[in-house]
Image (tube, rainbow, N blue to C red; front, side, top):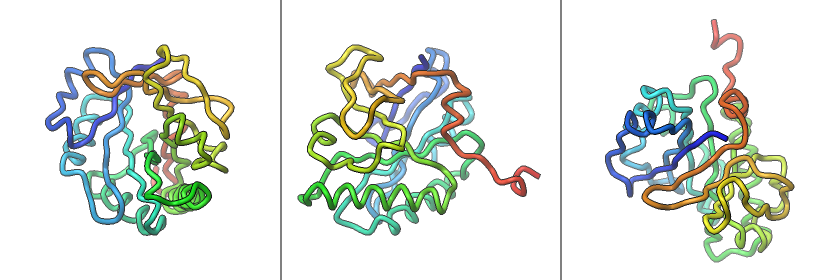
Length: 203
């Protein structure tokens, strides 16, 4: 399994070189939330991950009460302004609040958000969530997307998998001193979930 971390503005300055030397192979950094917030540390984190040869991931914190397509536009603009997508880069939806909406509406928002990312960026996103949130029906219809499950009470690499998924891709197994994750597979397996340039972009 590969070791990874995830970060946001709450971590402030991240020493990516140190993490890489300590065996971190992949990471996710918060990019945006809703349609107005851009993490002030995202650009620095995106560059730091890439310069340290860490597989780069960006995530968007979902606000299901808002418009999913508008949130995707905000998210992808932030990624573009930070340097854009390179081959193998990962995109993720952080789905952990319902904004006081019923589960079917939350799930519909998430499906539309994922559809918009595929249409606009050509990437099938990873979905981050936690057990009780998924069990309440907020993730209905997302089983085709790789699951990034927050389950720090379960042993590393042995999380419980909630419906609608039947397996997991990434397990967030610890929150101390930083959020720590494992991916079940190789670096090539992980980057195969990420961005693939069109042939014209490779030229």
